Length: 164
Image (tube, rainbow, N blue to C red; front, side, top):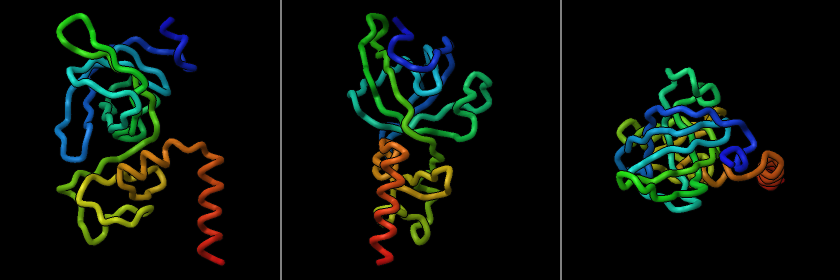
């Protein structure tokens, strides 16, 4: 049954990870139960809502995370969250939405770091994508949910609208 929900094979492994639920929120520790290319199941003391998006960081020194080693964080979306019968913790299933590199608020120079999509100067965290585009978490999460074809069509329409 465990493999019925994911297209990719899972690796059962228990390793520490950390996540951050909001811009100014502290990092929380968690432990994975299993990992696949597109998702992770982990145990946490924090409760999550289905559909909630947040950042997760994985120690890139761990050889078990081949799909994650080229970046230091990713934006994920909660697929399910269930209270465990033991020690008041929650089992959480997440889907990876996109790669990210988190720049903390203290490291942001307001004159040069702003969201390149909505244009708002950010006093919060900025996500630097693989293409070196700086986005606020809201824009990054929205873009990550589009299919590649939809994203390409919308970008082309936007560029052509600005040229004409």
